[in-house]
Image (cartoon, rainbow, N blue to C red; front, side):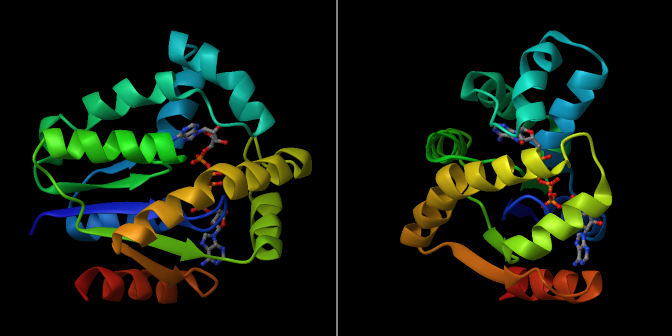
Length: 185
Ligand code: AP5
């Protein structure tokens, strides 16, 4: 069955972890803008060179670096049975862009899932992980940017009546089960 899923949630909520698990279960691609950008930085492509400073500081990279990339990714053949979008949309202008793009492609998202985890748990998880942008100053900035730019995306989808909240402050297995239940309901 076709599944088009959008994962929202703060840094460290478990979006990437859960998206990987569900992508395997549903046999659909996991499209993470963070992973795409980190790969571009590692390969020192023009996108990576433009994005690196923003990522190191915990700021969002400018929309113009992301929007065409999403348009291209969502038109690849492997998306025929759906996708999981992780890390996009990240602000209201990206959400409006996605709305228009999906209308153009004659697609609708099946489920928009918001993983909820308290800030203090997020900080502990991220400090334990030690990715390049997982130092305390950058984590705090990512959380500020999340509250300023991404929380309005939650309001955007709540107003449309399409958002489902899932408790992300449980064990991995419990969160997977919670997501599967929300997707099936
Ligand atoms: P991105 O890669 O999207 O990072 P993020 O949103 O900060 O998210 P994380 O990867 O930190 O968290 P996650 O929710 O995926 O949690 P995870 O599963 O990894 O973005 C990075 C940067 O790229 C941004 O700052 C920005 O600069 C740029 N960017 C990306 N997309 C953009 C966009 N659309 N527009 C503009 N800029 C963009 O888990 C975290 C840790 O917790 C792991 O160690 C994991 O093992 C652990 N964990 C997960 N679940 C549990 C659990 N249930 N219990 C205990 N531990 C758990």
